[in-house]
Image (tube, helix red, strand yellow):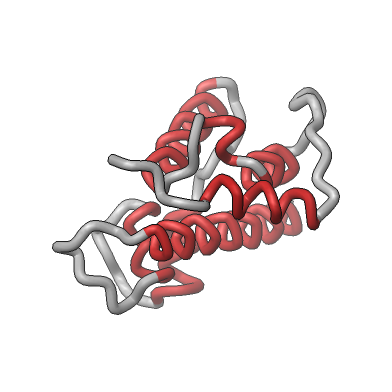
Length: 137
């Protein structure tokens, strides 16, 4: 798949606008670490695509759970309860796509604009989820 035009440049501009500073991952909360990833995903995965971001987050989830962390535990259920309000057999990445692009035709490839929309919605939803989960603990 060809790199969506402008996604890495978009996230670099967004990181500069937020005065983002790279920080060593030691001592960061899950939310802080994933906010750092969201600020510059291309720095972590080569170039930014929905598939790349999803694969990174799935790997993060597995590693966190394997070492006793919570990872993305409960994210799928949170999406269903707070944003779709119905049952679905989709995994969390499919749910995020439905939330970001409710009228999407599943038979066509994603445009660069759709990729950007999904990735931004994913990062926003993930941050909301992690913030709420931190408040509950």
